[in-house]
Amino acid sequence: MHLSNDDVAAIVNEVWSSMLGLPVDAVDLEAPKQIDGPAMSGSVAVNGATDCLICVEMGQDAARLFGATMFGLAEDEASDDDISDAIGELTNMVGGNIKSLLPEPSALSLPVVAQGVSPTLKVPSAKKLLHSLYMCGDRPILVTVWNRQD
Image (tube, rainbow, N blue to C red; front, top):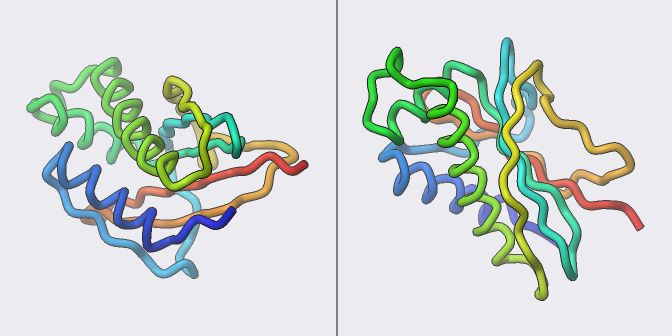
């Protein structure tokens, strides 16, 4: 299975544009692939013909902006639940669109949201199929897709 960076970049840009009205730009793969400071991530699993895990990670400041924007709030008005809901929904949208590029049959799990230090999610015994960096203004977003090794 091969996922194209260009396809995933188009998905991330479309999701951020349609859900938040914010543009996202793909960044050179040589750029740092880790979020500085406190981070949040959402993840969804795809099970079926291909078993993989899709993670969307960003700094907490970016998560707060995206949560506030999604719900039409000022950044200081967005609750932790608003932020988690927004990150979960953005991850679900990115994951569902990536799933559509994978062989059928497949099913998408519910999103899971985590906080911590980047990388907020590690998948032991898995191979990274894709690891891309995007910028929404000055806020980095990492998208990683892992595949369980057979």
